[in-house]
Length: 256
Image (cartoon, rainbow, N blue to C red):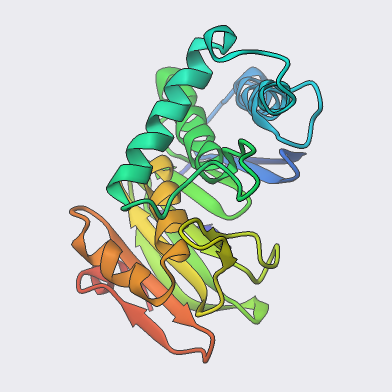
């Protein structure tokens, strides 16, 4: 999980709102002056829509209806098909370490939905003409315009940052077991990952960072090498002993 703060002097009133959606706090902060309330409502309404369609925990969601066998593949929404195509692309790029199917064969696209939703929410703001903002859903973040300082949490102490990075027009996502327990598994053997505690990935946007953070974490200790090989991405891994491993270009983002 990551924390965020502002690092640019702008003569404008900061406007920030947080709501609980998708089972987590979602925060939007906008630095542009005179931002109407409807902009925030539009973003939070979008997250509510995503939750209602893609949550495997809502019995009326499209995901749940698929898992219940109540709708057939030819009845799936166009957006669902597109999202699953992106998930399949990620599975192939990660050599099978990313999979939206559970060991029981049920569909659970959570590993791709959050970053995708953050990125789409950021696009809503950009299309509305908003210049300086960030969108944070459960610690995965996309920033735009201004430069923001992002804190990478200590896996064993949520009140401590182990590293601070400065980001502009980018996304950052962390996968780990220290918030939600063992919820990420290796799809090749069905076992939970226990070699590492967290893997933070910086990418061009939240969607890209999130999907590869999930895939990299599922690889265990090899995940940081996977991120190293991805063009345009950097990573910061902490193993179970508290030892950090960084990709070769990560330090260019380091603030302290």
